[in-house]
Length: 347
Image 1 (cartoon, rainbow, N blue to C red):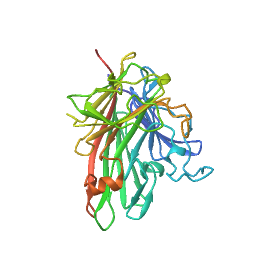
Image 2 (cartoon, one colour):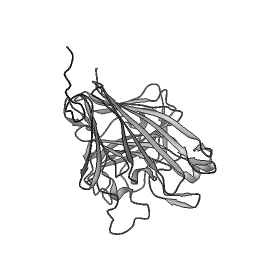
Image 3 (cartoon, rainbow, N blue to C red):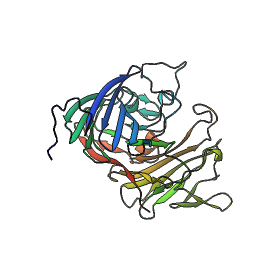
Image 4 (cartoon, rainbow, N blue to C red):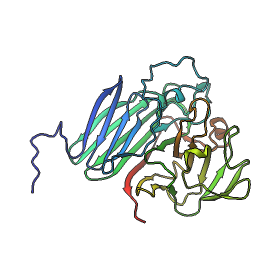
């Protein structure tokens, strides 16, 4: 039977898109019958909700910090930049550097780069019950890059499709790092969560001083098991309870394909991420199980981030010296695609 559609521009069915203001922050929501995606346009276009409607489960971690406008100032400027003060959880895009503070051709860039702290422009390109697509863009301030992405939802489809483009708008060759930083949390995250990967990738961990961790020295082996300091095998694919007070960051490389599935085996809900390993050859896992007792967590952080990274080591100066960064000549662009699907796991 043909669907009756007297109007479609403010519909409450099928695919739809909304822009609104929340606490002074421009927000964008995309949804269909299966999923809802919400972005904070004024805060790096962070994806702050990724909701599976059937069970009303948002898989992303929500920090104790609310979403704040980037114009809100902290009590004192952090030498590492504003990322941690503004971090509300969710999924960030990291560009053109990440992790450590960087000196980029004489410009200081803070922790996790530029793209996630600036407001993004938004244009709705398609808005029908069958499909919605938006074009987001931002120009870096301290580096000569234009970053663009197109987000698409399709009717009755649990996948968020992301097409991306980075362009060097400068007059000389530029280097860059690129990453995606989705952090998963409660109620999706619990001790049943497992990271599923094809093949036998290599996992490497270097313990962070000052945090509880089962490893006391650099340890490397085949995913998912690594021997701890006492010879016990630690499953690096799983989430641990908050009372473990563990902190682990580790790299996974030699991936067979650009796909992972992070699954809650109690509920059956999973996240499937797919990407091009030529652009993002590494996974970086940041797992914080209640370990951090000082700034910025104060014991309140329970999350497991499985991030797409372009470059190792996570230090721009060292990676550039090693020739491990991406490069674009003047006027050139790099395009890639990433997709994220919420699905129900079948044992």
